[in-house]
Length: 535
Image 1 (cartoon, rainbow, N blue to C red):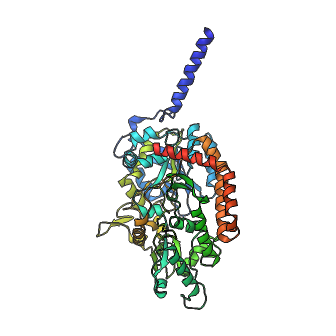
Image 2 (cartoon, rainbow, N blue to C red):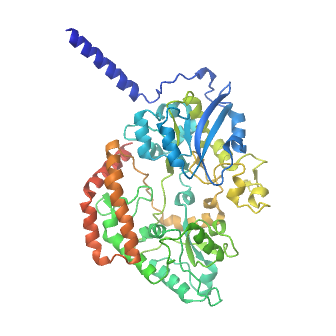
Image 3 (cartoon, helix red, strand yellow):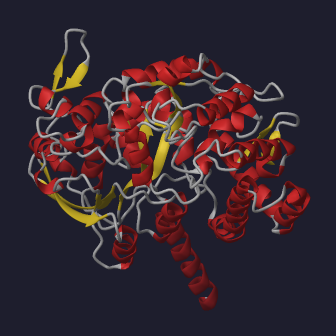
């Protein structure tokens, strides 16, 4: 009987331990909630200090002395001591920080993967945020209530949310797209051609650019189409060939329109036809010939020289220099050879779901949640993206926000991002905040971009999936088998386009993927999709 009582007692202890582990707010810290104001500013009556670990981008000033966070400290009574780690080597420093006994209070701008959010969440390094959001994050909770698909995209298989994202306002299509295809309008006029609306017309335009001395100096320097990678061209054309119909965030799976079930579209006949088309463009030198090894500085230099007939990028006037950067006009979603016409090159509003996490060592989790939640509301979005009225922005006659002249037309010749980065921290991306269209003034928010997007909107796909979340066991398989399959697809895609693999080898390519345990890979994707739907 004594042994039974001991076993019963041990069982009660185990049950209590599991219950404590499952509590979505218990991080073994007693917070002084008497010092916390649940609404309004300041967030705390007596000043507190948070240690936050963040990446230092190429444009970033010192976060410990930059206008936005100096202002926010005054508003909140929360002092942040920023540990800024350069982007080069950031992942190594992040891993060291995660394995140390001296954790920061939070990681900011960290781009922690969904798999690592779950891993360190289960270990207790990152605390669950569900209850903190419900109790202390009215801005996030409002977004979740209005857009439950956003909450679903952040929820792990164990039911917890461990990270907060870079979040694009739903319906802010130019930001979700990121880039569009642009055509030299003056060259179209010289060629007596319209902006292409079909893949055949796109081919004819590229061919005409190659065969015509549009620059007029006999150099034959014109490049019909340029972009940073061949993958960007493939992504733009997927909707013209009937694949990729759930957007870019979810990778190489979509919904089979014939059977209404998940499919791995890189092994479909439609994808083969897409690659055959792109191979034709490459083989006839209608695409930049060094595209498989093109360095970004060379791409932007070519754009500044004005030698591209068409490009896939953000508004050329914003990303290229030179005298020709304002001569581009936005393109359409192209109709393909079998009548497919949709624009699939868009992402889910949840970007970088691990942009912000709170660690187990944080003694002020509720105050920290209030601190970060502000940037997901209207006032916080204005502060984060525009700064302070009269100092960094003004409201024009039309009632629109615009940066002050020293930022818009910097006397030192700084780009917009460089000028903004002296005061604000959004240039470079990856931040935990809400990109509201009325305040966002990056290259995706220009007037030319909005006009380009309006041409694409009629063909924009209606349903966009987020990156799926997986259980720990599923993550193990996705990081091995899944990574091998995806790497093989990427390498083979390049080889088919370049001609290093013949399309006579297509069946062999498909069989190789199946033999890499594609069936298990798709079972995991199906399970993840069903969890997303049920959330």
